[in-house]
Length: 424
Image (cartoon, rainbow, N blue to C red; front, side):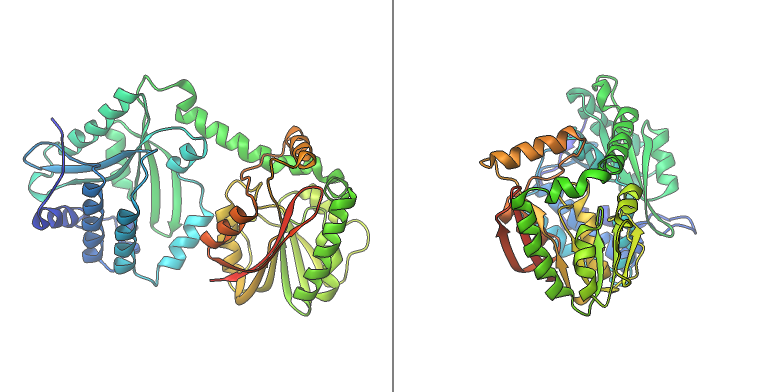
């Protein structure tokens, strides 16, 4: 019978950390140790995680004898600010900063983990954050007993149970105990996160991993292909009204002054409307888009000699770190499924004192014309991943490592805010 843990001695907490850190990875694997300063750092981090789990009342053991421990929570459970701060402090204290950039880059470039996909679709689930059997009880079947605690909770509430693991042998163990691997995130050579799930028979059919992953694939393909269909009319749709045309002319004028004699990258250029208007002032400019048909439209007509159009994924840019003085992304962040990844990539390719220029449509329920445009875009297959007002958009940039130095709300048919920001 499982018991919820309300308190542990520091000695007991350290035994959990040491048990976790003592795992022997295969020669080709690094696991969590890649991110930390050796086994002691991993143990220190797990100890901090256990303290957090006790505070949040999400730590359980197999019995009053405390043979093994599991931490899990419902997906709607939000960690307290104090717990989050404590855990973040532990991360900074234990991290090997030589490897953090490489792992962060891998994290942003790799596919979503299964838990993230469930959150994307707002599917409730149980997330297992830690599983550990203390040294003297290892090899006695306690791993099965631990997982059964979470599995029983999943069956009781008809919810999938999800965890991430960092080693092939661990993955095989979880598969043997009734879970299946549905995603793999490659963070670096020898550092993978395997997304595992246990699916009780009583969960809704639409929450089954086969259905969820298929829906996720279709969503990505739809988001990518809709812009191919929209390419031929995009310019007229966005700048075709007097209000929008006037706003864009003001944007062109401002951007020309910022990009003068600079190395410039534009992301989500579409048919190249902004790029063709401002490139002549830049030292050089690369304008990118995911859609081949958008780029085909962009190549039409007169193209400045210093402007190149290239295909690129905003979340997986092919350019080197610190490559550009200015990065432009106009009216795109609200339709990118993972805008945080796009901003991470922008931070990576921007030089230290580089400038992000990010004009973006904003959402105002009181604007009836804007509402009509939104409905028309939705009918065309455009999915709005975020609906920010001006303050919300600026706050979003700040949360993702940018300091806004200039912003102005524009009087356009579709409400828009013009933003310039630098890396924090």
